Image (cartoon, rainbow, N blue to C red):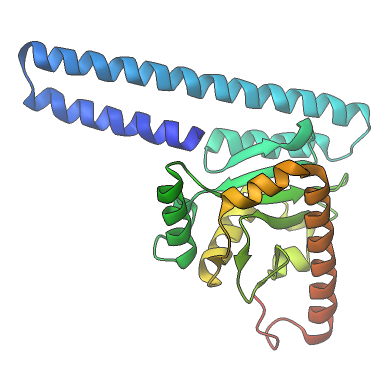
Length: 247
């Protein structure tokens, strides 16, 4: 929703600028006043959203430090960098620094890709933005141990996606130097766009099912993705990547 608010504010500014050149008199003044009120409301919503996000980070950081989580300082730096860049929408699950949900909207992907078009069609049908949601589970010693990254919803089908797990070399054969989270998310977005991924099921039905027993569903999805990564690693340890057609 934050992205949509920011986009609306940008659009309002552009329209206001073009209108001021062609409009005149009281009609132009009234139009300008309306745009200003709309922009002020959107800006207030965006600021409140940002404040809530930063408050969540502070709570998560304090809890992680109290538990002695080694990666807490590193993950807070990564989160703040993402929020300041504004490229990705991130939410901490239950104020945990180790579990993130990342929303990838249609514009995060190559606009010519089937996945971007599928998400755009879903959003139009729903009358609201429908993103692809990644779940990211970080280890306490990130980046020395790999994160568990998988598509949480909607279900996507691709020859490179298995139970939400991504057959990406960087995620299967993790190296600590891959630990720049923004760069990792950019590469995941490109991978999904160019892997021929398609949305298999609509988000609304999955969200309702998850809401009925969200914790159990999330645990099952996490465990399925972890098993899929174990199989992918075993396969590529034996076959390599170039010969197996991996990415």
